[in-house]
Length: 543
Image 1 (cartoon, rainbow, N blue to C red):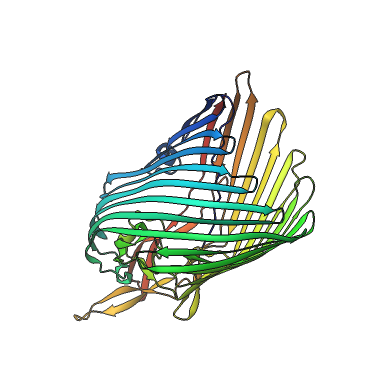
Image 2 (cartoon, rainbow, N blue to C red):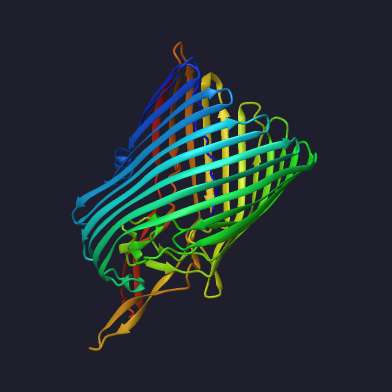
């Protein structure tokens, strides 16, 4: 239900470098260099790909998913104590499903992302560091589709644009070896333009389950603007050699709902031995709804208030010589004021999620995620490396006074990795994944008598998320080799996803309800699965 991703852009290497690569689903190129007597450095990369051939060969599917992304970075040292960085990241994903008989369905989707950010770093004296960031972003989403089928007739258009402009300033002061202080503020303006329309006539037998009428029109046109103001202060203290404490508080203001929130948090790290550490953390985290997240396709027209999550974490980590390690962590996340959301009950990956009969509205009173995780890795000495992780967890919502598992709840989760470094540059890596099947809902039928005395069968869902899909597991493998050439380095690989072609159930579709020969309700449906056996290969040359 939450996560933190810490990403750092690649530092350009000294001298001029180039890279080229091509494979079944990608082609890429990169370059790096320096200027102004090594005071400036630059890096750029481009990648594009198409999954149409891989899908057609392995599964016979007709989708045409394409993507491309590019990244550029420019660094310049103004003086030994000051530096500028200019970064640009552009990306786009396109999926087209041409109209085909007898389905009579067409679909087109395009997602675009544009990010620019300029960073200025300055060292003011021996104990003060200042970082300033100016950023701008544009996110676009366009969908269009239509269908003329027995269970649905509709036309859909969805165009959204989000522009973000921001400024962030952070000061770090380290007056003593055992104490440091940090403070910062960020201003962001978000402006989203939404143009959404669908006209539908759904005869799907599951349509009675929908919160929105099966026949009708949903239309929304509008501009949503939000100003966000954030500020924080924190301090890190080391009163003892073995104990480090960090405390802080964050302030967030959201203009759309005129919300002001304070979020305190602290973190303790105790190191009883050089190779072991115990961590304890607690904090409040408030998450506001961004304007482009408003689910207008399901009739939502007003931004929801901020959610508040309380995090509690207790962990232990032990690191041995040679790289072997053990980590155990227990966590709990308590969610207050969760937003209502819309999900598809039986098919989570349908092309038109808001235009299916199994669309439902979930409005929990509270939520929680909790569990314990174990991670063990072997020594990195020698040709064989391995790691193993296990998690026992639950993710639940409180609905009508009862705790119900979320759609991504998985009681047990295991990942095992094995890496074997062979002679002559060969390397074999295998990863096995397993988790308990995700929750689902049983649906049966109930006989309804019509005024004329005839009977028909309507869907009757059982308790929400009271059943489970079969367990998910698969084995992925990758064989690679690296050659050192007179001009650079050459790497090639062959990888296979789902090596033993496991059929992992992801949901159900094409429900039909009727009376059996015995006069009892009968339910028929198709079972849907995740990706099948999928091979891929590629080659990269860096010089």
